[in-house]
Amino acid sequence: MHPRPRGYAGAMQALSIGPVHIYFGDKSGKYPDGNQVIVQGADARVAFDTPQVANRIGAAFDGVDLVILGHVHEDHMAGLHRVPHARVQVHKADLAAARSWQGLSAHYGYPPEVLAALRPMIEREFHYQPRPDATGYADGAVWDLGAGVRIRAHHLPGHTAGHCALVEESSGVAFIGDIDLTGFGPYYGDATSDLVQFRQSLGCVREIDARVWVTSHHRGVLTERAAFIDALDKFAAKLDERDEKLLAYLREGPHTLDALAARGILYPPGVAQPWVVFAERRSIAQHLEALQAQGRVLLGEAGEYCLAVP
Image (cartoon, rainbow, N blue to C red):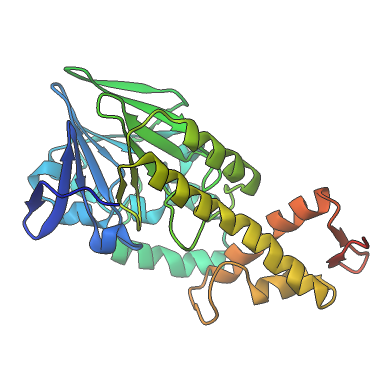
């Protein structure tokens, strides 16, 4: 549930919880937008990520001293062009992706023709600019903003190698990024994504000491632990649903990885973005690897996957 908003930035819905200020993107931050968190301490003002809504906030965002990226993707860098003066920090596993297009390209892992189509799109829609000045942080990093305001990083990889939750500890507000509790479910379709790590992170995020949970997308803010756990359980259940979808395909007969990717487990039919088939392929390959390890799926000599004989 969303708490009652205390204020607005123009027509923008916003919420303050102690030193933490949350500016809601369009449709509670539905992609391609996101939800902007700004933390004000006595000595510094810090932004968590910079979604599209950052471009509509004004002075409260434009005056930040530091941007801490919870992870690197185009929709989390959409306001960086507004704050060239601000320091930028990102978990060291995502650092190369923040610093250059070459690093971001490797982060995505898409073929050259897809990257060639992607770059002008993210430059146009997300104001994409690399930040070669970005520096890295590690799991457990702490930022003291003065007057008891303190931020701690919790490394929760899977969505990307460096994906982190950022927690303002005095208020108990946890920004959990793209563990976003959407109906779409977890995304792990890029080169640095990892399904096994994502499953582990879904367990770890439950244990973070927090009273409020803020997602990058869709949910926005949850203020009751029971509601958070329920949403997290439903989000995690998407992983088992995708396993079952793959097994259903294989019950029809053997499939190659390419054939399975063409049918898909993530996106509804008709989604035409150029990276979709590659995200499907990367995601499905990880599910198949796990199902093989469980003895439920076999890979034949002809490169076709089939159900293991019970």
